[in-house]
Image (cartoon, rainbow, N blue to C red; front, side, top):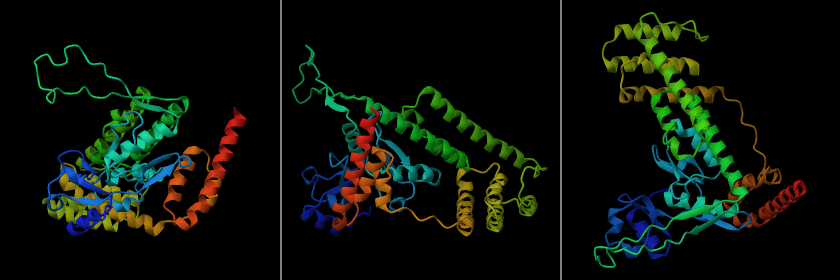
Length: 379
């Protein structure tokens, strides 16, 4: 989503278009209400158009339009995912290379939002759609609610407690979503290239609501990955580096060792390592160059890591097989395995040309009826 310049933001406001304002003093992007701001607000804050909303669950529930592509994000931008464990606290992630796999998985499920409030609204919509009840509990006033004689405005109102009474279907949905988060994290750990990426992938694990068993599995995988990096560093610090473990040609690695011995300055060493990165013919050869950065800080490693990522992307591009053609949307709809997959496809339909939306929705309704009939048959 692009940032509007001052003129475009004012024009959109005058024409009654819904806007978002980047209120960094509070929670960042939020709905813009002109009555709450002074006249110079357009000069002081960033604005963007409020994303469109879509309907899911057979048009039963409306949610904010999820993110359509990671290309719309800036590097290190924060994105949000609905959290069914704590509806008002969505999960948040940075748009980094270490999180790319994870974010792509959430993108496929139409769960990514750039605004925290939208992820919260999405979470509430999912609970409503799956049969849960979201309601405000009644807060009973205490007898001495104003013991020191404060004015009515000064007395703080007790916070409203939000309770979620989940049905059996909601519990199943929650368990399925937790398993999805677990799989994404475990797969992401396997592809981490340094300690920074591991820390990013495992950021705020306690917010997911994993069971103690699942949490221990993730922590064990994290510790094993960190131990692997420590071992690589220890090996790189020795003068006799063991090259027998690699099945790759060692000419590139040997040339790196020779150069490292001859260069003392950081910049000279960095320049040569970058040159070796671009001489690497495989991912293993490119990644192994990180072993010669023992004692470097994260800021010193970053330029080399960026070049390694570029080289690996180029290697993958040169060796990639043609991507098989994706089935048509009609085929995907008619073969949707369950309601969750059908809901995701329904969001995609909402983004199509209005001319063909009506016809595509017929296929969605047809498949939903088939799934409902199949569920009744099993019951």
